[in-house]
Image (cartoon, rainbow, N blue to C red; front, side, top):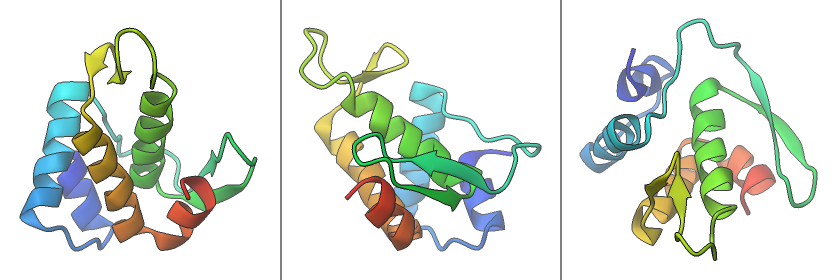
Length: 110
């Protein structure tokens, strides 16, 4: 099951740009969700220690943001799985988390 199918199965309403972003994350950065992934998963904000229960899709998007941000300022630039990540993609993923789960965004990103 791809990320877009998973999001739709979870009841999320995705726009075409949202679906395109999830496809890009899968194809370019190898972000994957599995049918047997536990649900919910607990995600932690590495800055303030706050945590909350989220579904695997939100957890994956959060992990993408945190891992990408951890490479900010490196000589190679922002990257995920050794692939460059533009600020535009980074921001779109953050905003997708906000769109899909405002509580998780407030606890984990904001």
